[in-house]
Every structure is written in structure tokens, then in C-alpha cells.
Image (tube, rainbow, N blue to C red; front, top):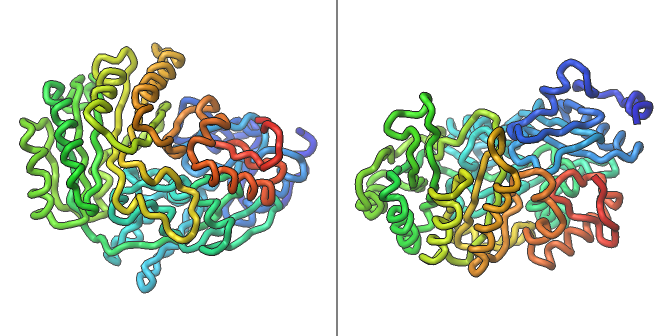
Amino acid sequence: MANTTRRLPPFTGPVLRPGDPGYEEEVSGFQTAYAHRPSLAVGAVDAEDVRLAVTHAAEHGLPVAVQATGHGLSVAADGGVLVSTRRMTDVHVDPATRTARVAAGARWGTVIEAAAPHGLAPLAGSSPTVGAVGYTLGGGIGLSARRFGYAADHVRALEVVTADGRLHRTGPGDELFGALLGSGDNLGIVTAMEVDLFPVPSIYGGQLVFDAPLAQEAVETWRQWTAEAPEELTSTAVLFRFPDLPAVPAPLRGRYTASLRIALDGPAERGERLVAPLRAVGERLVDDLREMPYAESDTIHREPATPHAYTADNALLRAFPPEALRAVFDTVGPRSPVDCVVDVRHLGGALRRRGPARVAVDHREAEYVVRVISFPGPGTDPDEIRERHALLRGALEPWTVGHSLAFLYGDGERADEARTRAGFEPDTYERLAALKAVHDPHNLFRLNRNVRPAGAGPATR
């Protein structure tokens, strides 16, 4: 392998091997529990660099991984070629067509900033530091998801390098287009996308945070409240214990809390009326609901911006009855021996509706997704974390319709074939496997939640 990687194409961006200055920074990402360790890291600056990297890997029989920010890293490369797209950050907004062309490494914060002066907004998620392309290829459940649906349903075109080293432009009506949206990087490396923007200049939102004695009542009230929520309102209930650290405000330090997070595409007056039943639960530790420019929407969830180690599982539920809520508190609530952040997102609305492009985002009948996140590190037992997460999955089984691959965080043990299949309806998985056999018959793109080519044997890492 060492000899083959020395005969390199004329890349424009940096090409790094283990031990080279800059290698560690190039392969690192937001996830710090593990990282790619490729034999060759290509810092792509354009689609041609991506094309050359894929061609080189194919010629030498090397697997290919791709990384922009590393938020959703599932299978870390051990050898092979890593295509780092972090330098490909161009964003161009066309206000006349309400679209944006977004390069492979651009983050949502950049897209939001470019769209805001035109009174427009993308279907971004809760964190501005997440890569826009990777998020969209995973489906994309954003702050306005119940009104507009999955981000993947609002893509106009994709530019993608397939395993044969060719650059394609693909759009609705092309089978490859629909398969790319929902299957991640299984069928190629997307170098740019064109997406719809929406006239959402402002949003009403923020958090209501309740202390431990009111936590279960707050989430139960929220659970009942979501049954009548309009599609313009997307909300989340989060259970977690604030760390007992000086950086945390004193009123929250070390407390177990329930945080109700609200995003309404509408005026503050309507928002105040809608959230009145939630405020009626009782005293809040935090109540910062307000109308804000969409450019400040990241303050609703306040996702961490510092890289860290995490692992997570999830279940998509057809319903979230009181018994399911009790199961959450009993298995991963405040008495859990493993620290868990529980994030219950209200789905439904426009997320139920499937467009004409056959986008590979399934289980649309789900009304909620329950996510559980833990943080491996010194003093934690990875097996105990896995067991606790599995207990939650088992407890929620009566209402489960599948899970979201985009919300599975953890190295290979959360990326086996059975778990990947469960992220799709059976006919969708078979369609993806058949297309994989056409576009990537040797499974070059296998360092991911892998869909194996139809007729192929087990993939190697």
C-alpha cells in the first residue's frame, strides 16, 4: 500500500500520510471518541480533487471515507483514503429562485448567514456547526420540520462523484438522486447540492427549563400538548443533568432538568398563546421564549460547539403514550447508573408526506423520535452504556417502527448490517442495494452505515 500511495494524482489540496505535519488535524472531527486513521488523507478544495481521490482509491483497491465536520462519524477508517471536504465551503444564494448552492464542506451557519439578508432560511437543524450536505443526505429534521418536512425533500440537484471517478449532476426523476438522499455516502461523494430556501425571516422560540421535581410533569404536559400542536410548531423535550462545573450558571449547576424547546414559524403573539399550557406547569429555571431573527435560531437548542466524545441510539415511535414516557424515566431517567441525555422530538406534520423524488427517508408514519445520548470517557464503561441504551430500545419496542440512521452515533457496533437495514423499509433497502451494485459494485464506499451491493458477500472494513 505504501508504494501505491506514493504515485499520486495532481491534487490541488494537501495530501497527508500518518506522521505528516497537519495529518492529525486533517483527520479529526467533532466526534472525539474515535477518529479516522487513513493511509492517505486528501484535503479536497474542489470536485476535481474529490474525483482524483476516488479514482486513485479505486485503482488501488482502497476503501474511501468522506468527512466534512465529523459530527456523524459512524465507522472510522483504518487505512484507505479519507476525502476531507472541509475546504469546500462556497455558498451561493439566488433570492429570485429561493435556492442556495452549497458546497460539500459548508456548515449550516454559513448558509443561514448567506440567506438571512434576503429574508430567507434553509431547512437547517439545531446546530449551525453541522455540515449542511451530510445532514441533508441523512434526511434532515430541522427547526421547521413539521411545516416543511425533511430537508432531503427540498433538494433541487446534487453533484456527486461515483465510484468510477465520474462527476454527475443529478436531480428529481433520476433514480440515483432519490437514493443518495437518505443513504448518506453509500453511492458516492456529494460535492455540492442545490436546496430550496423559505421566506422565514424570523422565528418564535427558546426554552422552558423545569427543575427535577417538575420534570416528569413537564414532559407529560408537553406530550399531551403535542397532540394539538399546529404544523408550524416543531418542539422537543430534553431530559438531562447539567454538569456541576463553574462554567454552568449557578441556578442550573448539577441539576436534573426537563427542557422544552420550541420553534414556531409565526409571530410572538401566537407563540405566547400556544405555550401557555406549558408555562402553567410551574416555576421555570429558564424561560427565554422570544421572537428572534432566524439567524439567531441556534440559541433555541444551544447545541455544544466544542468537539467531544458521544454515543447515541434512538427509536422512531408511532405514538408516545404515558407508558412510553414512564419507560424513558425508568430506564434512562435521573436514577440511571449511566448519565443519559434524552431528546424526544415531535415529528408528524409535513414529515409524513413523501414527495415524488423517491427520497430514501422512510418510517414516515413515526410521530416521535426518542434519542438517548451518553458520553464515553474516563470513569465510564462502554458496555454499561450500550446495555442501558439497549434497555431503552427494548422498553420502547411496543411503539417502535424503526430508527433513524442519522441519529445513531457510535463506532462500528452501531453500524452493522441489521441496524442499517432497520433504518429503511425492506423494499427501499433492496432498491438501494440494487443501485449500489450498479454504481459501486466493489463497495468502495463502505466506511459508513453500509448498504452492501446486491449479491455481494460481507463487506470488509
